[in-house]
Image 1 (cartoon, rainbow, N blue to C red):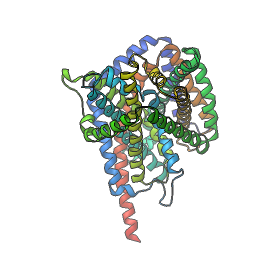
Image 2: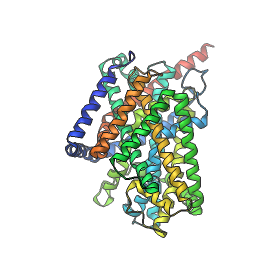
Image 3: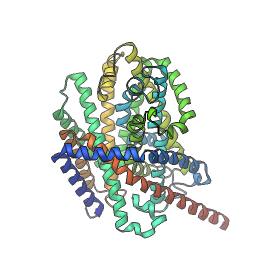
Image 4: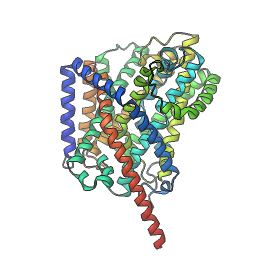
Amino acid sequence: MKKVSKVFYITLALIALTVVFGVIAPQKYESITGNIQSFVSTSFGWYYLLLMAVFLVMALIIAISPYGRIRLGKDTDRPDFSTATWIAMLFSAGMGIGLVFYGASEPLSHYAISPATEEAGTGAALKEGLTISYLHWGAPVWAMYGITALALAFFQFRKNEPGLISSTLKPIFGDKMNGPWGVVVDVLAVFATAFGVATSLGFGAVQINAGLNHLFGLEIGFLSQFMIIVAVTVLFIASAWSGLSKGIKYLSNTNMVLAVLLLIIILVVGPTLLILNLFTETFGMYLQNLLQMSFRTAPLGEDNRSFVDGWTIFYWAWWISWAPFVGMFIARVSRGRTVREFLLGVIIIPTVFASFWFAAFGTTAAFVNDSITDLSGFSTELVLFNMFDQLPMSIVLSIIAILLIASFFITSADSATFVLGMQSTHGSLTPPNTVKLIWGISQSMIAILLLYVGGLQAIQNTIIIAALPFSFVMILMTIGILKALKEERQRMEKLAKGK
């Protein structure tokens, strides 16, 4: 515990205060955070849309520029992990449970319940729903993660700075980041990470509970979810104890195997030709309309602004709140890669995979909804399992899905304990197991308390609110990395001339 920084104690205190308030006065807490979140979405929606679009443009410019040849580490460094394992780690930390949780339900909602602009239940609504799902889980999100991770990896491995968010602001503020202002930045990052992951753990527990209820009749409720979280906590703490190169590496590879297996089975037993045709056309529509969709604010009354607020702007704020965690983790596993390889890999591969995932599950959900049984009345966590019921191999599909959610659950929590440990021990690449244990238990306790008081919505609101100030930090990080890359390029050119 000698390595522990002020960030550890300050953030734990803030988390404790927030959770106590949420437990004592859950309705008041949800009301207050809901009002602030609504104000942020309405007043800063245009800002979030512009910001995510700028991240995408900046990431692509950096990747194809001469800066792309700079290596994240010494010039002699090579990647710590194989490309396949690296990609698996990206998914496990970046999206994980969300792909399974929303894979069928989000496109179905855009198609059959509340489309953005088209008439519900039409072919046009289905195509639009798929392209919007690709947007929400695609290139802008991964570009934002990429910029955040690039800044962290560059300063950590190229410049030997501590692996902290505050370190990335040194090109702008210098040594001031070693003082109180640096602590403020790092506390904000750790706070957002802890609550973001705790909310995801809550969602995971709810869906595992729904799956076990569907298969074995396990009662849906707090007691079941409590037992699920306790069981998973033991597993992810054991994994965290074993270290990055063992636990998370093996879990991430397991995730990808299960995800690809589930995807292949859906492709085979679902409406195969319809999936392939719809993916081909809608992915083309996505690429063609990416610019227009990225800037859609729906400013006039008849434009369905509520859809933009409830989906796109919600997602942009949600992903930004995850940026400290995902960015730090991606940075940690990317040492030795070039800037170009890193950015193009982070943006292109997850975007294509996530889009095909939504095409497969969303098309199958729409097909089942139209031709077999109405799925639109089920809650989000039950859509997937009720869709499986109407397909061949339904029990096998449900079991694989539950295993995949549990595996993603463990990996996300495991990755987060590592990142939280690193951020609260002055950026140590090997945070003490005691610190990881405390963070692991803290995340699970937050999730359990929130489920107990029905406070997941309030915590969603909290991290969306926290995303606003952190977005300003991300702008400064982008300026800082551009400045640092320019200086590094000039230094390398001088060395080349000197030879």
